[in-house]
Length: 129
Figure 1 (cartoon, rainbow, N blue to C red):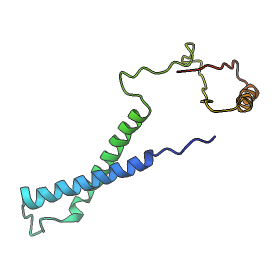
Figure 2: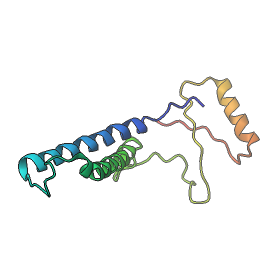
Figure 3: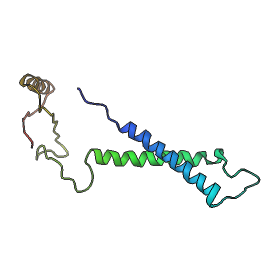
């Protein structure tokens, strides 16, 4: 269909990496500078003890970050007024829309023929600003 692949996975990786770095930084600062405490002769900075916290921070940052990236990228945030394709689109009717800005008349006819073959009840062409 010629649709570009989403870059949501890239943002998820970068946000997860941010969570890992944030968790490591905060833990390092707390256990070495802010409140160094010796527990049973263990070193101040014992990495194996902090792996669950780092893992959870990575997941937290990635999940919440990708949620907000998705909401902003797809313009689903509160207050956004969506473009209404057809007033009759409700819970029992839906509309398929195709961006045909730079398509030739032949491509538009192919799309219409494919929709008719698939059993479309109505086919309308509408221009938006």
